[in-house]
Amino acid sequence: MSQRVLTTESGAPVADNQNSASAGIGGPLLLQDQHLLEKLARFNRERVPERVVHARGSGAYGHFEVTDDVTDFTHAEFLDTVGKRTEVFVRFSTVADSLGGADAVRDPRGFAVKFYTREGNYDLVGNNTPVFFVKDPIKFPDFIHSQKRDPFTGRQEPDNVWDFWANSPEATHQVTWLMGDRGIPASYRHMDGFGSHTYQWTNAEGEAFYVKYHFKTNQGIRCLSAEQAAEIAGQDPTSHQTDLLQAIERGVHPSWTLHVQLMPVAEAAGYRFNPFDVTKVWPHRDYPLRRVGRLVLDRNPDNVFAEVEQAAFSPNNFVPGIGPSPDKMLQGRLFAYADAQRYRLGVNHTRLAVNAPRATTAENYGRDGLMAANSQPRYAKNYEPNSYDGPVETGRPLAAPLAVSGHTGTHAAPQHTKDDDFFQAGELYRLMTEDEKKRLVANIAGGLSQVSRDDVIEKNLAHFHAADPAYGKRVEAAVRALRED
Ligand code: HEM
Image (tube, rainbow, N blue to C red):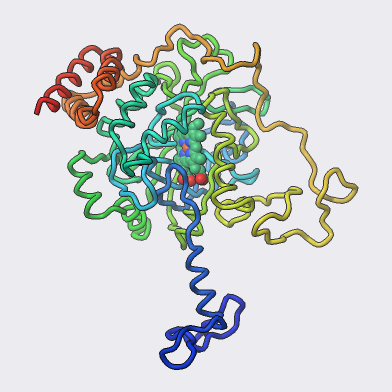
């Protein structure tokens, strides 16, 4: 095989890749050394802004296969036939730390799935937790500021973390989740995934259903104790990446079984709590799990930057048969992601291989912008309506319309009979075994006892008391013991 020649970006052969051009032997360097200038300049531009949250992550390709008929509930093309397979790309992530952070930390995990369907890409951008900390997107930037590094100390501060929770009682359910055993998954393969929000499915007759997604891991749930995590994070900060990469390279392909919960639209208004509140789960006894299919990951990306760092998921990428619910948090997210990606990656991020449709093509009149590669035939019109053969609208909405009423304004969520912020945290606590409760209480007390202000501690304790008096008492005793030490 003949040796390939090293070239500049413009394809000219490079004579010397070891020595820069200088004015005489030992003299200063020459501005005319194009290869050196280009090499240094290109290197300076290797980083793009990291994701403002979920910066650290791992991705893999695979497929989704339908195992059960759900055509009574959605006409989504990729779900319309048992046995049908659709290519997917999945990115898992941690949330709070920056790109260089460790994987084995107590933090929710992102679970973002891109289905490359024949009717466009469907992005289901969820977490490994069925609920979230806040229920209105207006609180999200403050919440994230309180969890990420403090602008003065440059560290995550227990004072900020717990102060936000002290003043956000709706976080109690998710805090109980996060501080329990599942708060530190052993790997991305050994955790479940959830859409968390309520979405909407529409069937071929135009009937609508509210839906929640649950991906159950077929590897079994495995978690780390706080001590194990600290050790692993120190030894191999990329432990989740290593695990996923190596499993797939070995041919051990992780899989998840997708289930959904379905609520007829007419039942939403009269349900005992707001079914669009992302701080709450729908009890399975009210809306049982129904199996849909199997997600399998079997191929690692060839290039982490191109395919994982530049992957762009947006909860706003729906396909016919699927749409949003009135969940306020979800509504905020419908804006936030593509906006973040236009900043982080540029307006043409949708044309990158990992983000572009694979089972169909994008056909529209969006043109140009930074880094446009013109893929249009030379006669294609860039306006619509036109009298030529340009793409035209279908007239068919993706999902059924939602009924709305009332006046505009900054309203609190609609009142249902049992809307309080604590009862599901209490139910989760009572579901735990005695050992699980012990670890939960110790984890909470370990964090809360580091808080400098008594009033912040008291407010947090009041939330655990409200969830379950026994839960509150135990956390209180554990915090007092640690503070007296
Ligand atoms: C990433 C905003 C709530 C799951 C992101 C990103 C933004 C964002 C701006 C970075 C996107 C990018 O640069 O590509 C928000 C806002 C929220 C919210 C404004 C609330 C109003 C949630 C919730 C979940 C979630 C409730 C889970 C149910 C994720 C995941 C990623 C992410 C998994 C990483 C996606 C990837 O792997 O690229 N979020 N988020 N977020 N968010 Fe959210």
